Image (tube, rainbow, N blue to C red; front, side, top):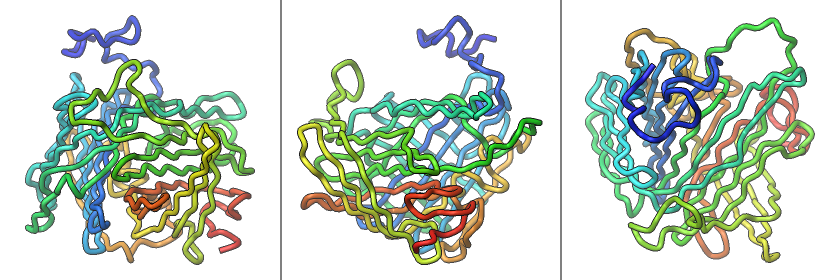
Length: 376
């Protein structure tokens, strides 16, 4: 089947662009954004995903302000031309790898937005994430790009309009595509090998550089994915953000962490990251959590608005939940982004420490499925 995208030289193989590489229902293509005011006064999370095998497009915007997580969700039939709009939610690529716009038109939730994201670094390609079960089934294989930037515009929550100043509101975006487990699980007759994850992702924003810290570990602590980069900010607003020889990031050669959890909780209260640069220089980053955003607010593990869930031709919903009302252990809240103050060598920055800590992990004392650390 041909679509308007086939008029552009972007094909990866002999198929039309609309043909997924697999009939796996977990095939997806997603935008993710976050934003955080310099002093942590508010947080913005946004997402939009296409699921071509399922025929679904969904999107969400969430804002944390005054201790309340407000969210609006939309889900509908995926357009054949992969248009990036569903209900009131729209993503516009103004200039690829540099400028994107995220808008939410008036709707019953009272949550609207007109936000422009502007790149402040080059775009980086994260290591490919691939998981295979012991009996040989590929259950996860996707690519992500990550980039740091600033936000400008307005967000309105229940009649209150918040001015978003690019001098004070920083954030990260990623684009990912491939196969990834969605909220709607496909029944199988295969043996269960259990589940679990130990995932940390800490994109941090300082005035002169950004840091990319990502890892996956197995229950015994062996690391199967690591990315530790120092990424300078662009020298000028029109400096190139992509292309051969443009990536000026520095990859660290060693990365160790120490986590401090809230009492009787898996939520990280503070962390220390120790890194070693290629020339042997040692770096230490200290993180302190200001508050925690539950990723369910933009669809991750949401019981009703989970990614790829089917809501017919179009449905729009919303929720507002006090941060203090989220309870552990609740499977819909295990995927988190902790808004953190970051300190490194005289610098003070802002960012998030994302965590997905499911199942046991011997180095940190995690046991059971969502049990708190034994040593907390």
